[in-house]
Figure 1 (spheres, rainbow, N blue to C red):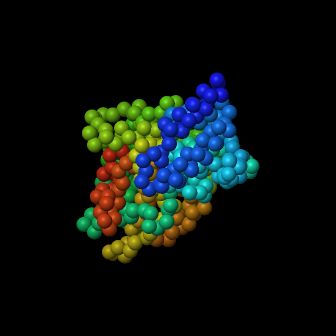
Figure 2: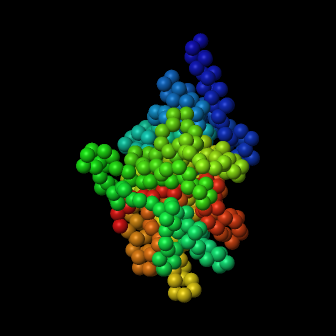
Length: 376
């Protein structure tokens, strides 16, 4: 009786969260095969593993759940399933993924420690990696009719830079209090034993700074509107001196779980956990130095779209020195190569198709600016 009940629960879970239902870009045969493989995997899970999977699906990854290990190259009926984690990820999250090479494990996943015969199949321990090729971004170059204006700077650093010195906005300037190193040799504690912040995060609504900055010391930082188990930088808790515009409210309603900003061995990553796309630029992403009138140089950075469930390495430790040297040699004085900007739902930058009419990040309803402590 209990075995029958467990089987019914597993079938119910598959039916309730099967994302391929009704999709026209997948044949009925392919959908049926994936569902059959998933059913075979679910039957192998014990009660605690099934509960972890159920919790992950019901909370959409909002609750922290344990790894669920499953053998690789396992024979399930007539099939040998080489990558069971890809099967569950396609069935319960993003069906367009075809290989584990497209996925990145989250920092909480124990498989990172080096399992070879078993792999974690928890679909919310993975994200799809954003392609950062030259064609995947949006240039943030200003149109000719809008040359750089200092008062359009976000208050940290100018979005576009020239070889002349750009004064900072005095009312929103930043005071750096963190050590200038977030690489592998980062010192995790001060002389007094307290962890030092590796980043400072400020939240903006268009050109208005909202609340104080958040000093990040943990390797994984949540930036969110609401979470089942809130910890990190909660945007809903920030004090406001003015009413929230309707346009901003509509965007904030979709932030939800927001994003995770993580400090990892190879760099700083963004994991999109919200219900809307994120748009981000960072100094080690694709960029170009453009010569403009007067022998000046403008530093153009690509803005990259991060759909829900995707991740992006927004800062690469290996490329950081190259960016600093390139910026210094180009004579760009007001560009700070340790700043990352992330907008919720609305992108910015000018494209050939004018898809995003907002030339500046300060036109976006909700966005954050992350100041990293980077050795130069």
